[in-house]
Image (cartoon, rainbow, N blue to C red; front, side, top):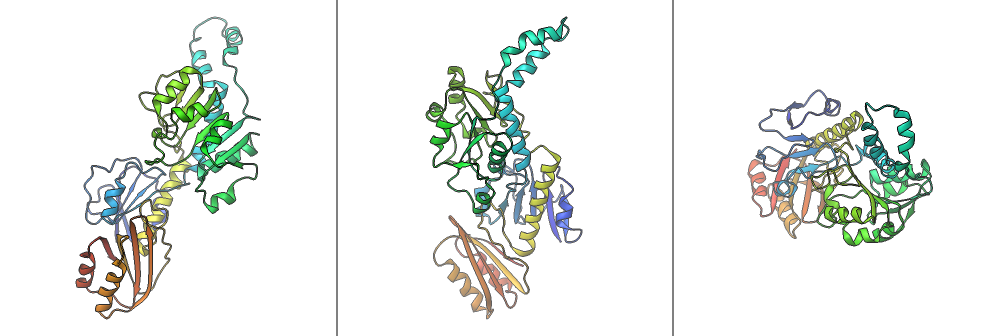
Length: 387
């Protein structure tokens, strides 16, 4: 029986993914094998020795101490694409309200409450909120992952926009999903120079932090619109405020509000509603639960943010999983310990991801506890698990 701890209220569809047997799900689990989490901050939480996996029901995982968990041999998952449609719809809304000045118009309209002749006042004052149509304008999409592709395709096919896309790491699957109407360009600089609207869909990392700063904003068309539905830190807030004040940027729409952006002229802050739909919450929860179940039962790894992809499937007999540093000679040492016990290795799979590696061995019989302990004591071995 595997123990699953939930750190947030999570959709009941997880029980469809986990099944009715073999899993005990509780918010109070003390020694869980896995954790399902949405927004709870895990950085200061104690880590039980029993913990094998953490699944974030969502794309971002800044609330999980991934580096620390990696050294403990804990697999961390996220659910890329599960909330893609919900976020994409909000991005399209962001483009509409940024150009058409709908938000400012609604705010002004509320000031007319109680006045006589509202209809006439509206007709007299509405001209200040005139804004351009999207059809025929150019949208630049930085990052053609699950969300970026949905936005790009909808803008090109449904809204009649010219769409430029940039992503040097686009997957084969996503490339197949991209409409022929999308023109792929080779650089962010070209996106910025040619687009009336620019939307960012890349993960936050040391390389992407403040990827849009003063230099990049200066490259944009004067009066362009910038949308950020990925992470606040992707843009330099001070540079954005300066660009808005000078007129270089017309609007900045973000789903990640910060104190320095609230109340700023030209900034439209949305209270992180991108994935706030019942459909998205169900999709994320279901995917997270499915990934945890597969990992616990078979050792398969899909959509991990810290371990290599390993689609292993079901197995007969004994499967041994060793999470270790990607260092020369370690696989040989692991094999030697197993062979010394006269256990036959029937299949061996080794995958790496940067500094981390996972070795999976299928054997004709179970290893003794002494051999498992010996494996666990090897330098740079982080976790040993026999399934």
